[in-house]
Image (tube, rainbow, N blue to C red; front, side, top):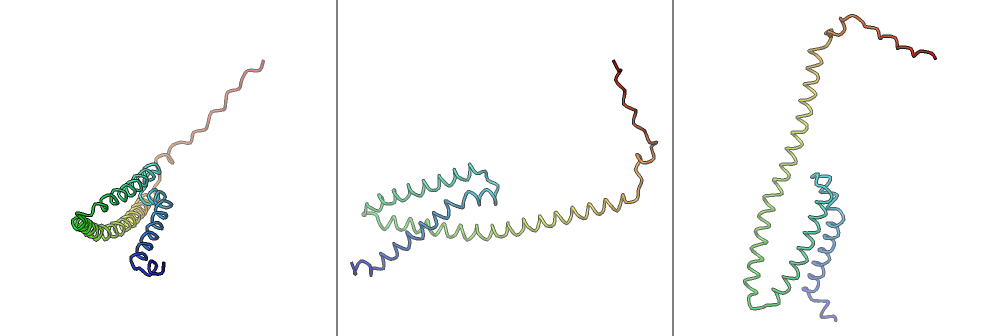
Length: 152
């Protein structure tokens, strides 16, 4: 038992599954609400996407277990996984800065839009300030007296 617990592979596996479990727990609890609030995705679509993701993850682990059981092509499988991870890192290195830039410029455009709207409202109020509308020069009309119902 002492040899088992002193193995680095055992502790790395423990921490891998611990972090994975924590991440899936956070994902299950907060992903639909975050998708709804940040991106305006409907709750049905967000939970459907989360369900598909989790089912795909579970299926991938099962298939990965069967593939790993066939030890004859382990090097080819490892190289394929390494290539997939490299592609993921490359994609994230492009996607994350792009998302940050998009958020930054979206906020700038929103602020600029509000400033332009404020300036237009001020310009319109200055152009029409003090002018008399046509309705103010029209003769005042009195409302007709309501008709009385005949008394029986």
